[in-house]
Image (spheres, rainbow, N blue to C red):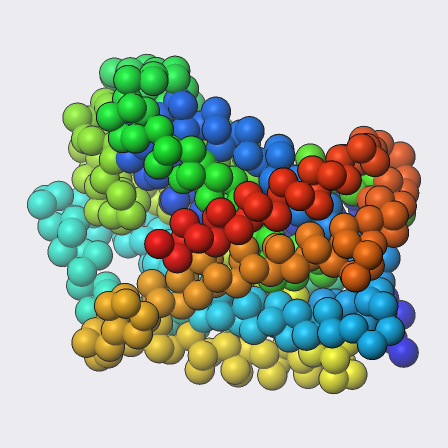
Length: 450
């Protein structure tokens, strides 16, 4: 039995775990959903649901990982009552992480591609061609495959060096770079003429705007965003619990990771909304905001080539931090489940992921007529399976495993969560965890399916 790796430092654990949570959901989805839902009221509900839903389930993933010191499948096997079948969810976690990366690597590749496009001056063209640049990239399978392959190979190369010398070392520098870049970009956004109007839209709650969108939609979108931003339910965070020390309580660590995650999402809004208002762009542009609307804004901005390249470098860091964190999950599963060495696991996973990511790449060009689920293309179908099915069902599984007598049990979970120094999880939350939180997660599942 190989000795379990551990993080070199607490900062390493926090930054790697936050890096897994911080991704496209923060810097792409959060701003455009906030814009579509009218700004400030959505942000308030988002923060509320992050506290009452996100943090509790995150502590449960960490608790299963830390108590077992194993990846998802053997973790459930180690903690479940004899004869029960909770460990089946370990295979679901492995499948979920794999499916997530089958499309996430493509979108991460877009970010990398756009960094080089801005740095190379492509967006100094007349900006009526911004949509055409994005369209041309999607239509070119060779270019799409190149950016995806660079992302996959670089990600598994980092993981092959180990937890401390690979993942922790690279993520610490990348996350520190990300945090510096986002502050610089936010300061630039706030100094744009008319940018403060964007800040008011973003942060000052307006019930009138919320009612125009529909208050129920605002609340349910906030619930969805707060839940999915942490990538909980498919074991992607559980693995880092298995590497962490017993020195600090899990609620305290989960709160710190949520704070970092929220800080990045919050600052992304301070970049995007001032820019939209400064240049007369509607902030409810949807998913095209990043790749079609913002390039026009950067092109009109003094020094736009520099600021655009800096923005997409930040986006690359944000997405790649998630990629290598989830890749570590896949590698650790192969080490634990099959007894492979780390380098063999990294090489095998890399080869598999290069092939498995191709359908998403080809879904925008050679396979553009392929629609899998309800008329969705390949990327949207894969995202629907992960986001609308596997994450809520997986989170519900972790929750029930930790709070019911048929699973690991609330007393065992509470003891593990509160081990160490720091913020404690109160025992009187048990009824909320057993009866209210499952209903909220089921609501997310139903809304996602509808």
